[in-house]
Length: 223
Image 1 (cartoon, helix red, strand yellow):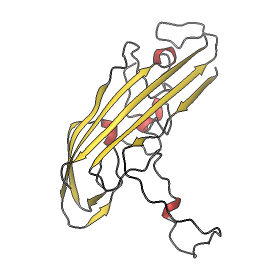
Image 2 (cartoon, rainbow, N blue to C red):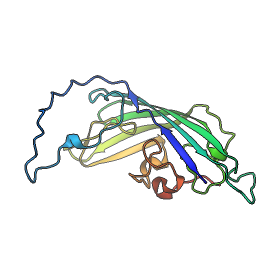
Image 3 (tube, one colour):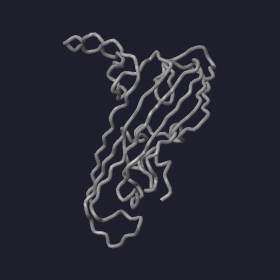
Image 4 (tube, rainbow, N blue to C red):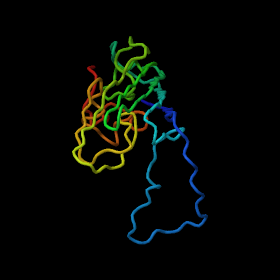
């Protein structure tokens, strides 16, 4: 059985202030001294259309994820209503997400995400134990009505005066945090946002699509 998948994940857009362009680099590449630390500029940077502001108390960004999958016809000696259909088919799914955040102070912030999931998976997501599209669920009756994906209050209780730089994102808009601290989140959150995480297999937008490898296979829908 042949199975093909195309993933279109336009990078996030943000409402941010522009940063000054960096000075032109020397045309001659200089080798760092032996034993010197690696250049931080060579590390991966977030995939965005516009740079995020590091000074604003607000956060607004969005993400669109489109997954097109196809499989050819194959012989099927027996099948049921929840089997993978033997006839060739294709399916397109989409997930649209709007992320928003606002800092009430340097220790408290509000986070809110609105999301719409539409389209479908091949065979309406039935017939495969390790389904090939993380963005669909095994319920073809679900519509694309927008819903609240997250809504929470995030509070930071510092245990030290020393701070360290922090990467801003949809789950935290602070650009620096106390080195020793207690973080409290109250509201609607996703279990996979904070528990049983897999850095190489936990994001259908940029990583693997199969349910069996997402976050170590710790979460699934009933078949």
